[in-house]
Image (cartoon, rainbow, N blue to C red; front, side, top):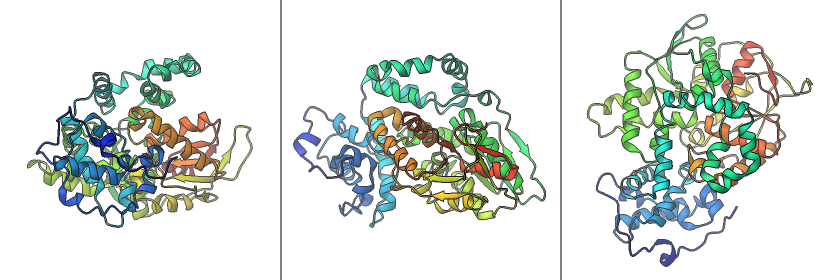
Length: 466
């Protein structure tokens, strides 16, 4: 990774005399927020895109400079400039690091929307992005792909594609998408969760639960574990059948109108549930759900509803840490592929939208420490993004590849036998690089470990039980 700054050269990095698009008047990056940046450079060392690419224009400080220059009419929104905004992972590490409190999250969100409205993308890029935004935020559309994907994997076609390496040569983006496909099981075809589920014992709370898109189809065991842990700890759980996508994917990529539409539908799904909290078990989704009051701030019909909704949203680990566990936890017995019992050493992987976006880091660790026999280990450079960043690893596969490799190396160097990951995108990215590095280390959601502990289940290291 490159960490030394390369000086910004206006002539090569910014100028484009034959291109005129700029920001429009609809919510451009706020000059007042831009002016809070004092150009100290504290953000550089924590910015994953800068660490990989090494250009000032691919850092938070550099991007803020570009935003200001476009606002002032000094440079156009050219393809070269748009690319510098596209390389941002949106991990928000800079927001945590910044001593001046620069709200880079708000600046990059406004900028992404401007880029999508005013920057005409190349036909293939536009087609690829359209495919992503018209598929992944819609669970029912994704479900149609389950059968062909299942046979693609079970018939060995996936292994053949990887062995030839042709896809990566033809299209690194398609190879990035294919490389992050989850391993399908019959669980993906058996969604039976919508409904109302009673608390075990005395009812302490009535909560809603969001299933997610990728989570409900490809990580159904995580949702089942979440439901069991909540009910075991005195929660009546309401899961509306009408719920769809939380809007995280389009919101993170500047598709504001699509994000607003999905947010309204999600709010309507929970409108009459009368719940104390709305629970989510995916980091990226949770961050967006808590931002509904910003996403719908200009909607007179939904602004107040969005604020009320976002105030109820809780990550499941955050919620359990607040209410306290009442279910008895049993020691977890990890068994490896050879049937040998090992000590359960766990390394917790900080998802960016938990750590930086929601300031949730201590709670998951404290919950894991409550499980008898668990030994928690910490990786170096724990705050480094894994490179998943929603669909970033499909749009910027080269940068994502380097970040994923470094992240997994750091996790493996702890010597832990299991990785705890609380975000589906991170789990897919890490799983891919575990396989590429020849590692059999298991990866599970922290809520699955709590569920196993409550039920007294054996943890199969390297060959996790579904």
